Image 1 (cartoon, rainbow, N blue to C red):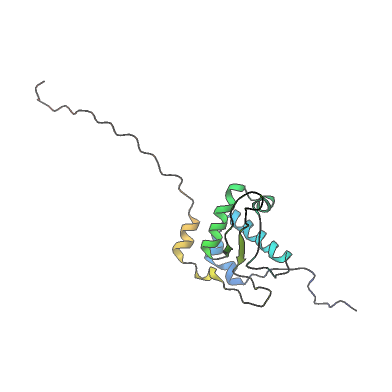
Image 2 (spheres, rainbow, N blue to C red; image 1 turned 120 degrees about the vertical axis):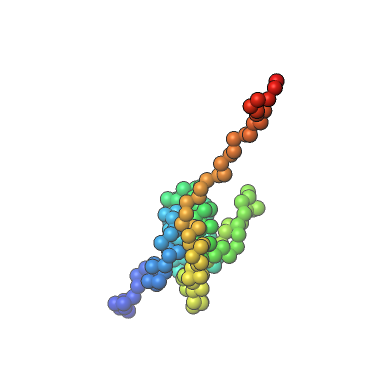
Length: 157
């Protein structure tokens, strides 16, 4: 049996031009792009059959080059912009008491030929703008106010 000339040798994820040119894509942080690519790799490792049930652990994200403290903000960024949906929220625990978070890539078909929902197209400009702004940091603490008696001119002592 001969191999087809146009056969694809590997799994792949296609991006429509509108996704690449979108304002939502342009404001993504480097950590968010890496999280997105790691989820795409997981999707491809499952032959495109597990979109909506993709599991990537924190250690797998760290192994992909994402700082441990940047993972959660990157996932929130992707979810806010509509690139990723968290289908089942995980929780930490020990032994049998933990559950992994499950993800769905909104711009990718699933194995049963469901079309992508492309929630990123619905990103509102104010969401894109707020995600693109750096976090200002914790609120500044105020100096304690001290009260001192005020001396009035001409007042007798």
